[in-house]
Image 1 (cartoon, chains in turn cyan, orange):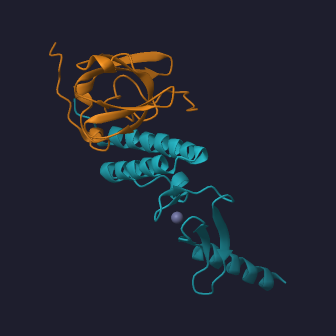
Image 2: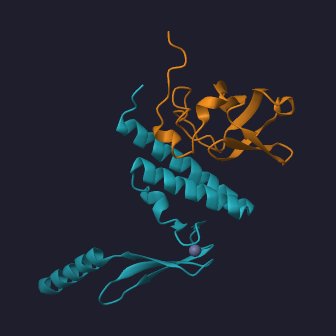
Length: 121
Length: 102
Ligand SMILES: [Zn+2]
């Protein structure tokens, strides 16, 4: 009857996917309490099974007000080219919370390419 | 709604899998007024399932007094409710006793 860790993690990922799809559906129907409940459950499942929340969904929830973010509808996505820390900012229009995804590595690569081009000339 | 090429939920893992979103029917219950309820599971707690009937009303059904019939794709699975006891996130790792020792 022993279930291996790998199988439990696989089931956990499937359950998270089901719950997040249902949460999105609930948001579209306007059932906000139910949406929050589904997101809360899916995050608890991820914690219990010790899996990282899937990338596909990780950036699509607001951790502060537990809302599904639909790009261009209830959130604002901008790139901020800050000198110290360039990042992509996702702002939840429901509560105003901002998710920052750093893109230092990408910016550095871009600068490097620019320099190489200059040297070629 | 859910794209099932390879069914995720099987009769073997339904006790650990997600019940929310499944179609359900109650086959037996200690309370006769609960028998025959059909609908969709919308929420789950440690001891109860919340079922939304097709007319939109919600019913709270205790898990341990009922026998449920879940719809998985085009198949049906009968589940004894007392096996489903446990919070949804705890059911993931729950040890299940062998109820049919053969
Ligand atoms: Zn928010």
